[in-house]
Image 1 (cartoon, rainbow over the protein chains, first blue to last red):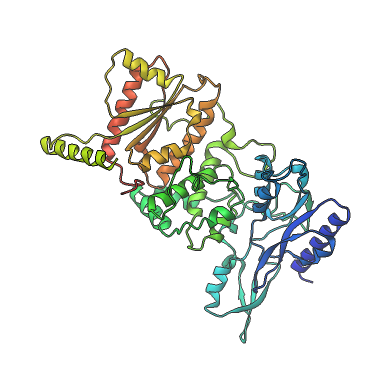
Image 2 (cartoon, rainbow over the protein chains, first blue to last red; image 1 turned 120 degrees about the vertical axis):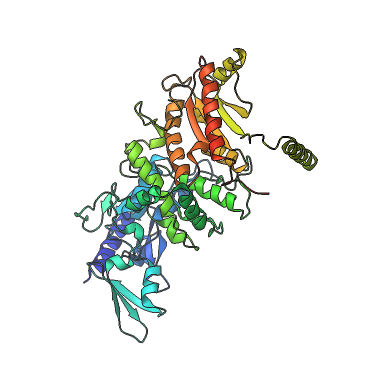
Length: 334
Length: 159
């Protein structure tokens, strides 16, 4: 029995037990998608439904994104009681959940985090590119992360782990959810190295004009579908500044400066929140390299304030606190 | 509105024709905190300390009130430089507003520079209510540095 099948079975058993013990009203996990090599988020509400659950390297969505709306009191009756929810969480999802709990978007008491070990999720765009136009009919992931893709009327194609996983998964510093109530499967003992910001440092080293040109080149691809915002678990504002009308920060058109302000503002809002799960990049239909920008903020938060998002429940968010000795070398004549 | 704009335009063109060698003057927005920097600017005025007229002052209750979008909006609307000034660390009227803001400012400054916007465009400073002379000095310095980088082209909506 392969590891993935065993993991899925363990997950089903855990989920069933939670429902049977009446500990939860809802479990958010993944089920098999309608297309090969895909999974889709699924909402399980009873023990009988738990057999739909799966867990493997195709489970790319960040499930924390559903929580703020699930727990929001807006438009709900006064005596409404928030549901008790369990969420299947890989490392990045778990960190997003911690962030949401800290920002009071999800009550910790009503939340059960089911941690699953993650060796990186498969980027279907990379698989598609490797298949060279052939349609995949199915596939599985071996224990070492090698992906075997079955092709209709052709030989199986084997792809190494590093060839197919998302860029954001490479060198992931937290493959397991740092805070969790139930852990399914073995915790990945081999904790990986600290996040590497080499590419960001390279970009910083470029001239101002080069950086601007690169920024313009990336952002001019944007069609303002807001998919990055919708996919991001930390973008939970009920009214986004991009759509606010009082004051109206930016228009709704595709004028480049407005698109820029949208991205500058949105990414800046993620300071101390972004966990580099890559959900925005996955959601982007125009293949904008958003991580080139989100990771700059990540790097600065780490370097200036020594803060890493979603790792502990106790540490206050970096922009809600301060130290007397914080860097102020940027101040004009301090 | 349009009339006024045309009139303004005509006036500026006229001015340019009359004195072609006249130096370009940047437009600066200064967000000053009510308790220190605004009073500092006021002191500069009361003490009759001269400082350039390029600045438009917006009074805010505290430098912690500054939303990064204020700064982005100003730049987008064609302001050449933004100065944000608050109380010195430890002197905040609200105890720690400027200290929390300082973290936000550090990130914002790096962030705008990272995407290629000139560092001179957005500047931060601490000015107390007793530092009228220093306020004028800082303003002078900000204006000079903005003059060096020239009128804002990036991020400004062209109509």
